[in-house]
Image (cartoon, rainbow, N blue to C red; front, side):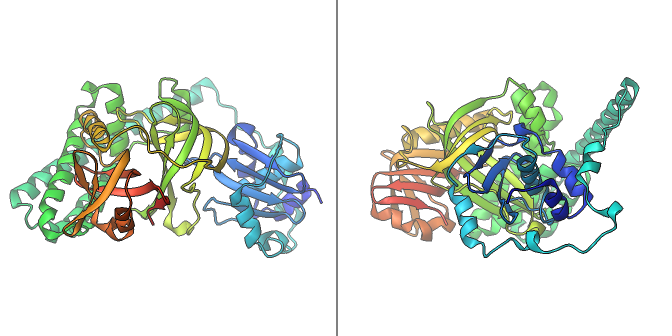
Length: 467
């Protein structure tokens, strides 16, 4: 039984959901639209995050699944996919259901509850109506109205710049005070002192800096007590460097200026990324090497997906999404071992790493093992040194190297090349210990200047993935 607009109206939780779905009826927002010819359709919809949401629908019973964190069922993405299918607004390419669709089908037990449950009768005027949404027209904006809006935006920007400048000055004074008091006991007062400064930074619209300061106490307590003053010194030096760079941003190269503004907390929209033709873009096959998920102090889940292209140079990229913790465990991460056929655009930076997907032509399982690239561990470390020189507040940097060995010395594990050894993060020791039993590993990990967090390894007996 094919989907119909009447059925979609019956399923919609409210009129605003239909209005939101209407805005998604653009094929350009859907890098993937496919069906299996038997009533199963699926697609990927590009939202505000780096990775598209995945949506699947069964036409027979209007069952649906979406990876977005919405608490409305069906969500706007599911409604939009049904709408495009019912109204034939976009072509659906024939295809074989990918693994994530099959996984969902395997977990289903009959019709989706939200689709099958009958809705209580509503007055005709209050029922969700597609016709009412279609008839709505956007208000006409004349030149005078647009000029007033632009003037208000300029005032808002100027006001925020003033707030940011003020809170950076407060942060620099706070750092000076901490150094004068001495860092030997900083870990004992870090929780309270960092929370106070972070609140000041949030009030000053410098959310990026606030997250850095809020995360510092946890970073200190992850390392042995004798190492904490050094970790604190590095973190405070980076924050001070960011503040100084922001204060003098007009004298910085454009890419470094753009990076420091993003680091402080200014957001760059997807539309701005797509419009800037001067940014680095790479089109090709991208292998998923790692997926990380952590909760930030601001109660947002930060989801990182690390990729490497098979094109010359083996560029790495990270897709970053932020989902409210209240949204539950839903996410849209790709899994290690998958390969994306996609074009990516990088955020402006002298060390381009964070990226967004521009066009996504499909995902499939990797056909061959990962080789780790042509770099030795020493060459990978040199790349980090060059990146640090270009971006002094660099946090972590992806290292990819071939012919690596993991060896134990005392209580520590080390990633060893021909002429150097890098300490592995203590938190990764238990999981990485099996790597010490094999040689010639192709290794991917994140290096922060003092220890390496291994995330993926290709060995002679198979793949190793960090838990």
